[in-house]
Length: 110
Length: 116
Image 1 (cartoon, rainbow over the protein chains, first blue to last red):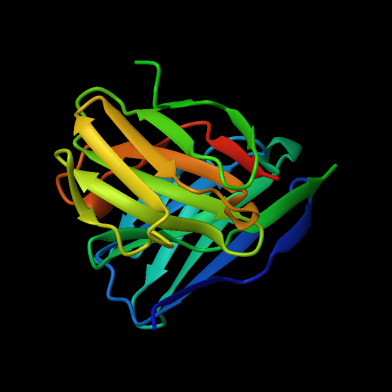
Image 2 (cartoon, chains in turn brown, purple; image 1 turned 60 degrees about the horizontal axis):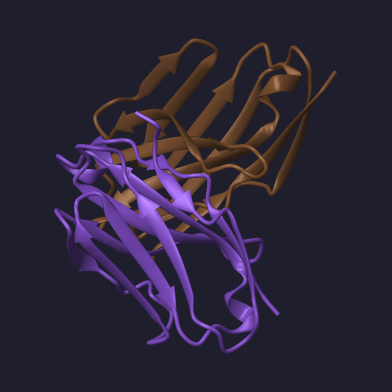
């Protein structure tokens, strides 16, 4: 069966360090992968999209990689700040559906 | 644009009652999705529409759940009769679909449903 796993439920990172979140998937052949941020009491907000033929995508302090051989995406936040604390979700498009992972709750410690 | 608008924001109802959740997508978006979020199961896709037509409702948990999209600017998700296990946050999202994965999904603020 298709599965999307994000490496950990919670991750604590010291302010200023790089936070790295992992998204692994099985039984998918996605053409695209997306990352979203969700704050408490709010809906997810789109951050980045990466295509299968793109190895890396950057946006300001965010960087996403996509390895279709390993079936894995890494999401990096460099120079992390307390305001980056949130839950981050990866999402895959497959079988005409956008399916989300369970998310990783990131806390940046001042 | 005001974004995706959901109502109500909070709903508390008694078991057995009918519940109707409402969604207004972003104008011009031709895809609409209903998701349910719980701590245990995360964000689950219930149903999605393309150009007002339901495309995939395989995520709808039971016949107690139904969704409609009578026009491009309005959708409802109905639960009848409601049960305590339906308690969750229900999100509506819309997208300008030229191929879903290529377009970002815009989410509403969600409706927090509590069935007692």
